[in-house]
Amino acid sequence: MTTQTHTTSSFETVPQLDLSAQYAAIGAEIRTAVDRVLASQQFILGREGAAFESEVAQLCGVAHGVGVASGTDALILALRACGVQSGDDVIIPPFTFVATASAVNAVGAKPRFADIRPDTYNLDPSDLARRVTPKTKAIIAVHLYGLSADMDPILNFARSHNLRVIEDNAQAIGATYKGRPTGSLGDVACLSFYPTKNLGAYGDAGMVVTNSAELAARLRTLRNHGQTAKYVSSEPGWNSRLDEIQAAILRVKLRHLPEWQRARQERAYSYAKLLLGIPGVAPPLVPENYQHVFHQYTIRVEQRDALQQSLSEQNIGSAVYYPVPLHLQPLYSSLGHKYGDFPHAEHAANEVISLPMYPELRSDQIARVAEAVAAFVTK
Ligand SMILES: Cc1ncc(COP(=O)(O)O)c(C=O)c1O
Image: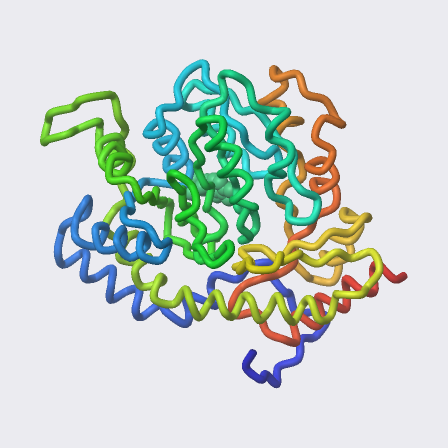
């Protein structure tokens, strides 16, 4: 990390995320890119979108990228392209953003939850066997907080049960698993470029990436009203296109992503040095041979709500992703789950807290946050 002389006063706010620091650094490049689109007067399915699709596909180590309107649409269209339909079941973790599950509902299928591992917060491959049913068509593996799920056993299980695997890679662009990029591990992978993501648009945007030419062709059709040729539709589709202005902005940001990723990893390393060994604090685990991209820096503490309150009183931002596991959401009450059904997801929901994390976070700010956490748990 670069040497900094700045020192935070205890009154200075340390936000959980500061997008304005990023815009201050790259604003001029962004405005040039937007001007280029405005001058072209081509706003939908043009050169920027096509170039961005191939750049993201390359980063993910796959052949095809299909730009869509959001990460949620990416999941819905991926499920459709994989043939998931009404009456099918899809296995997902209960500890994720609600979009992973609501996308399953959107194609008429039913989410079937499998618990997470308590150390990585990702799908536990050993819980799949008791959750699979004759109706199960697919598994969505979420790479939560920027860390890949343990994909090899998930893929083996899927192969032996003839299931499709969709990666929800909304939070982990750039991460790797045993040397392979997330996005290249399942049949298809879904990306979100929601503004707060590691690669964030200035609005909504998303993408599906895949090695399958057949799935990519189907996705291109589905995102554009099911059209296989101009004004010829072969099936019901959507308007879910990634627009040229967002694509041009994202192409600028994509060039900075490797340096931002390194900055996030350095900041995670600084936090870990300060927090490891403090009783009652569990910093994020990075399993051997994984590259974590730290979309969030999420620790675990027993008195989570009181810690969050204490941080807030010291002007330190934090966030809880996610306080209510999906099986206990009112939305899923009809599935008949109760507290105790997915204990690891429930404990995580009670104990996780995400500390400030962004590439521009300064070392004195990290020290102040870590000190506040340590003081709270040792008091
Ligand atoms: C894990 C996960 N899945 C899906 C989504 C949905 O993406 P979007 O907000 O772009 O629709 C998000 C982000 O919001 C997410 O974090």
